[in-house]
Image 1 (cartoon, helix red, strand yellow):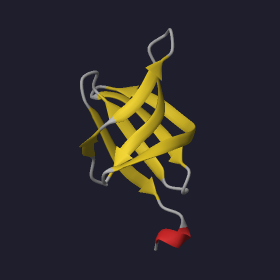
Image 2 (cartoon, helix red, strand yellow):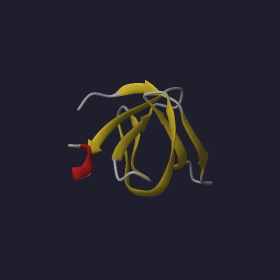
Image 3 (tube, helix red, strand yellow):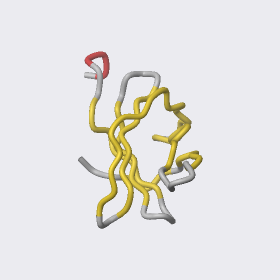
Length: 78
């Protein structure tokens, strides 16, 4: 899995968790339809996000930069 620097539109909860609304991937803005697991690690905050076409992205921010990687792809992408 390779992370790429990207743009993520997000709001933040009062306790500091990001709530991503969209991710830009390969030049396309992809709305996020659901989020799953989220965790804090030494390198920042990670969130799993589902987009409308069925792909799942791991989104990561260190507070100043967003990175994304595809972690699951539905069969029609094969």
